[in-house]
Length: 197
Image (cartoon, rainbow, N blue to C red; front, side, top):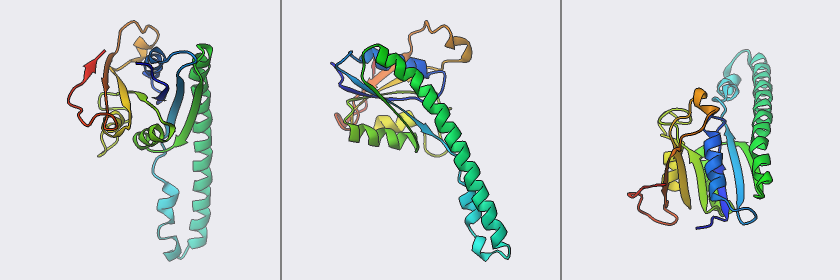
């Protein structure tokens, strides 16, 4: 099967080179387009929390100044993280382009699992390639893992790259990762069968 549009979710972890490699393995030069994406995670909006009750304070002017300062700091940090992520995505972008694969990149603040599924629908992806972090990394309290959500809600096929890649393994990727592919609700309502490649 030839995939025409492959959405690749990267998270600035050591596993990204494995995920990217699997996406390239599925792509055909000049026949497949890649879109590589990354979401920025921001801690809870401290400034918004501070704003609650500002108008009830006797020192509301000082509180508003503090709120504005915190918002500027948060925006500066977001701009720095976005610039770092864009440089990092460019590394993979250049590799895909060198192989003759039309490629786009995108980075934004969002819940990764929701954005991946929404973007796959809007862009018309026929495959999503993501990593799985064995219950750490992108897993968020009370919400489960990103890969589990995407498997259950994506409108297209999903390829999940399993296994943890540690720093000492990063420079010598000689093991074949455990890969599972499933057709998700958009193609097949059953997820009971997982295929190992």
